Image 1 (cartoon, rainbow, N blue to C red):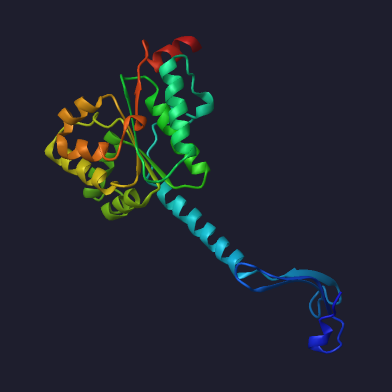
Image 2 (image 1 turned 30 degrees about the horizontal axis):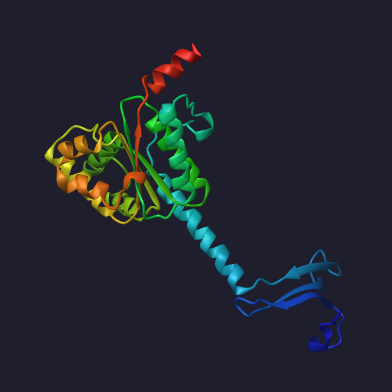
Length: 262
């Protein structure tokens, strides 16, 4: 091994254990064995390694990503009965549910941050369970995500307007615009007013070209009747049949599984 004493004088207080040049940032990286020259451990030997620029940059990016995820987390709204929902505890007893899970998994595994899904079916068919499961899974892969029950989200926006909360409308809408995946659960269940329609338009318009999962009791024809073409066209923008999932089961997912557990 080469003594670093050649550079510092023949002090013999340090030796190089490993030395190479990073092929990405071209910085010299060294692992050295060095004698401590002061303090309580004076005279002991320690091993030190400097980091290359790209490693430090990667750690900085990762720390920034985690801070961003934490920021978005504060805005997500989950119903209490869905907080434990995961793909692993989703009971799929019908073909349409099996197909829905398979297609949602495929969407998440090949996540592009540019494509959206529209999941619809009658009340209680497991749509919200699948949406929460998607929210948790995509976060575990390192993407940012927001989950909103739409009627509750509108109540939050009303609270912001009344200044009943400690963040601004701009904070919320910026998060909605920037997040990798937005999930709007139970769209169409909110009370219809001019104000609601305008807020929904602003929300959905911000997500053009970005990934959003919508769940609804309404099919696409009913969706257009409910909102009109201005909003419906933006929800359907760039969607094809592979992005539209219809869950049809003879029984409610909730009531069926409740009866099985009694």
